[in-house]
Image 1: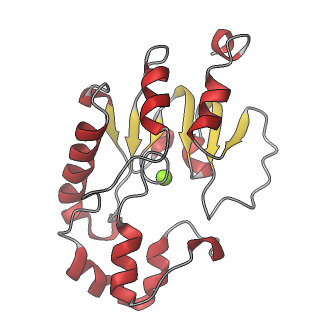
Image 2: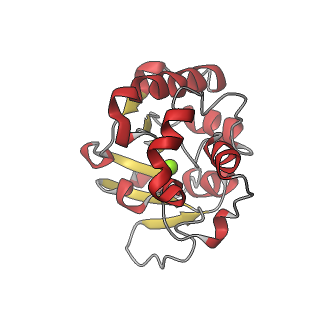
Length: 185
Ligand SMILES: [Mg+2]
């Protein structure tokens, strides 16, 4: 199970946020997961202005993602599991999910759309391997790959079967290890 935001692509959310706030945002200085926190009490105003925009228009896959995922797809059964960007205005979530669907469909042509999962609580999915940038989304996996992001870079990973990956080449290294990983999972 692979997460979408900040694992497959970083989307446009940060650019819209910068546009709204009128300043550059250096995400590495923040520890919190949700960049919406930067909006403070202006959240609803921001939503009203940006909720209809496509967060994935012209977005690109992260480096090496396509090639590595394609290779992994030969060996593993891959599901993309992604959550709502706008949980606060859930009646609008359909627009965003449609844009997510379209991005996945256009950029990952070898993954069957029936393997997309849209869910807020990813712990409901039990599977062998999960890749996500949010630690709690890795629950219920035998092997957990935490994708490095601004909000998790200082976390110490002590749990067994929890591995940090910094990019898609790291993911390849971990998951293509022929001698043990494949036989174990
Ligand atoms: Mg994510």
